[in-house]
Amino acid sequence: MNDEAEIYVGWFKKKIVDLMEHRMNEGATKYGELLPPEHDDRDFAAEALEELVDAVFYVQRLELQRRYLVNENQRLMAKLARVRADEEREPAEHKFKYRFDKSVPAEELEGTFMLAMLAVESLHGRSRVRMESRFDLDTARRTCVIDVSTEVGSDLARIFTGFATKEYGERWVAWEVLRG
Image 1 (cartoon, helix red, strand yellow):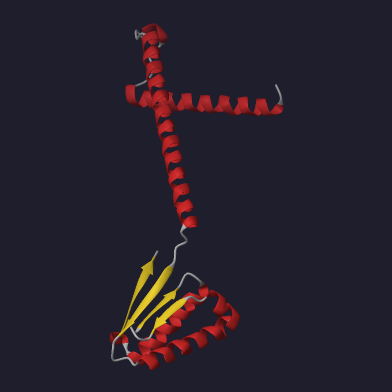
Image 2: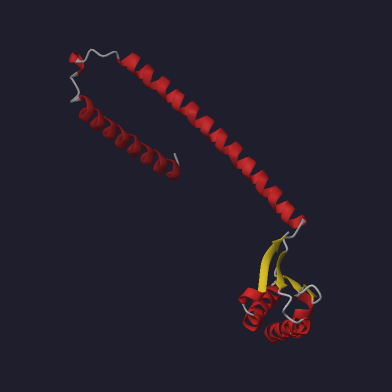
């Protein structure tokens, strides 16, 4: 036997001895001390058979549990793959839609938005803002939609929200999150 096998056998022997000691102590606590073999009239062959049948049942149940977990894992992995594939086909777009009261002048609304754009350009630079910001400002309808799926868009929405609520008041500005 090589060294690794000897180490394993030694570990296994110790485990078995420890388990037997534990079971013997448990049995002594539950049933009392062992009787000397000549006074013990139990049928140990029948007892051993019962224990083996129990062991077979436990192993069978363990295998059924393992199969269930394997199937459940496969089902969940397939579901995760479908979700990931859906996300790749249809990237999630998150947008904020603002609605302004009719009392907010269209020119002021446009000015507030342009001031927010200037602030975002100060943070990220003009080129990055031009490449990464997506929005639709409709002054006639007094609405604005900002795509917040990028850092630039998210900062634009934060700054615009702050400016607009400060300038026009909370009750004159309503917004909602649009997904998909």
